[in-house]
Image (tube, rainbow, N blue to C red):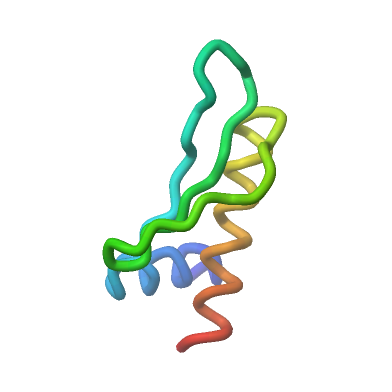
Length: 68
């Protein structure tokens, strides 16, 4: 299994959801991490959803590798 898919599956099984939050009337967006109800928003914005999506895959892998 692809390491990113394995990390995403692990995060979801542990109740960790990472998703894009668009900014109204802009192409920019934030990323939020919902760790079993504890929500953390990224400190900066991403230029578009494509960049944010790539970062989400990296975050899933980072969380998985540091907590498995």
